Image 1 (cartoon, rainbow, N blue to C red):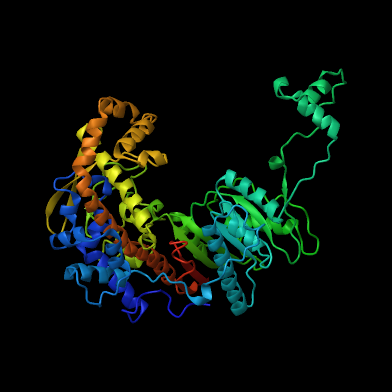
Image 2 (cartoon, rainbow, N blue to C red):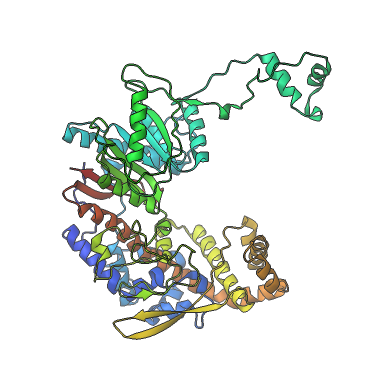
Length: 608
C-alpha cells in the first residue's frame, strides 16, 4: 500500500534524506524566503517608507516584476518550463529562486491508484458540496485500503475508525454505510455539530429516530392551546373556543423530531456510529477506548441492542491503566483537514495508545498550530532559527510559554542548528494559500481586497487608530540589535459584498463593523468620525499605482509558502520516523486533486 517513496519529493533528489537535508538548509539559509514567509505582513505594506515592495523585493527584480501581467507572473512561478528561452528575459536570480522553491515543495499530483471517480449515493451525500464529496469519497476509499492492507499483513482486522474532529461526520457516515460498513467513533467537541450529524445519519439510513406514540386529537389540542390566538386559523379557533375537558398533563409529547433520540443498532456485518463529545488535548485515546468497551458490551455479537450512540462529556484522565490492552479492539485514527494541533494529536495517538494500529491524517489551518520552541507569535519580523524574538505587538494573553504539542513535532527540526526552525503565525497563515488555483478574475478580486485592507491600515495609522511599534531582535551571532517597525493589527474580518465595490465603501463598511467592537469601537469612532468621503477617495487615488506592487509581493509570498507547508508535513513524517521501534512504516502522499482540495497531503503511519 505504501507508495514507491515515503515522501513525494522532486526528481532533483536521490532519496528522502537528501531532500530533507536540502529542505532544512534552504529554510535556514535563504534570507528572501525567510522574509517572504514570516518576515513581512501585508498590513504593513503602506505604513513604511519606502513601501514593503522596495524594502523586501530585491532591486534587480523590481522593474521586471512590475512590467509583468499578474497571470504571466503566476505562470512563471508555478507552470512555465524554466529551461525554455524567453523573450522577456527575467532576472537570473529570480529564476534561481523560483527553481529553489519548486525543488523544495512536495509534489501534489495524485497517483492513479489514489484517484477515484465520485460515486457517493445521493442519500449519503446530503449536505455536501462538490469539494466535500470529492474529499470524502476519495479518503474513505483510501483509508479502507490502508486498513485492509494492515489487516492482511498482521492477520488482525482493524475494528474501529476513530475520526478526530468529525464535524458533521460526512466521512464517518460514508464509512458506516455500504459498501464499507465500518464501525466509526466520531470524536467532536461541538454538540451542535453532533446533533446536526445525527439528523443526517437518519436521512442517510444509518440511524433511526425514536418512535413516539401520540393521541393525535389531544396532541393537536395541546399544541393549539399553546399557540397565540392571532396565529391560529379559523377552524382551530372554533375548536379551541368550544368548552372541552382539559387534557391530562404530559399526555402529548411535544418534542420536535430533532429532539427525539437518535437510535443506532449495531448489527453483524453492518456499520454503526458512536459519537464521543470530547475536546482532544493530546493523543491519549484511552477514554475513547473505554467508551468503545462500553459500546461493545452493550451489543454482543448475534444479539444487537438499540443504543443511543451518545457518550457523556468526557475529560481526558491523566492515567487509565490497562484500558486499551484488549486485543479485540484495533483502531485506526483518521481525519480530513483536522485543524492546527488536532493533526498532531491524531499522529501522536499511534505512539500513545496500544489499541491504535494505524493513522491517516490530512492537516489544515496551520495558523492554528501552536509553537513548541517559543510562545505564540504575531507578525514576528524575521523567520530565522538563530533569532530569539521578543513578543510581537499583539499576542494572546496565554502567550507566555512554549507548547509541547506545537510545531515542530520532530527532534530533527526542533534541534536543527541547535536552536531549531520556527514558523511564526504569518508564515503558517500563508501556507494555506492555493496560488496554483488562482484565476485572473479571482486574483483581481483577491488582490483588491488585500489592497483595501492594507490601505485602511495606513489610514488608521495617519488618524491615530493604531501606532507604530518597534521590536528589538537579539542577533546573538552578530552581537547587535535590530529595530524593526510594525503596526498594531485590527481584526475586521469579512464584509458584505457591496463593501468591495470601492475603497470608500470598504472604509465605511469597516468602520460600521468596528463600531460594535467592545475593545476598539469607541477609539475608532473618536479618531475616524470626521473623515470625509473626499479624504478617503484621495487615499485611493494616491496609492492606486502601488496596488500592482502589493499584488506582486503577495504572489511571491503565496508561491514561496509552498515550502512552508512542505516543512510542516515533513516534520510530521519525521516525527513518526523517529520511533522505529513502534512505527513500522510511515509515508506522505497526495489523496485529493489539488484543484478541488489544495490541502491534499495525508500523513500515514503503521504500527509494528
